[in-house]
Length: 74
Image (cartoon, rainbow, N blue to C red; front, side):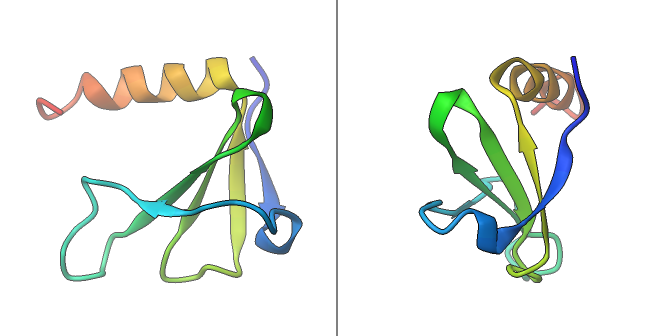
């Protein structure tokens, strides 16, 4: 499974970003995601919306979520 590569946000003009339900309410650790074509998922730091974006293939995103859900009772 290849690693996600940083992508400029301007390369995803049609992405509809949403904040993670687990992001902090004080704006200090906010992560945004967007579902893309072909089952891919993009992730970025909401404090830097023009910064780099990680784009995960569907299988890589599922593996990431499985790892996160296994921690801290999420």
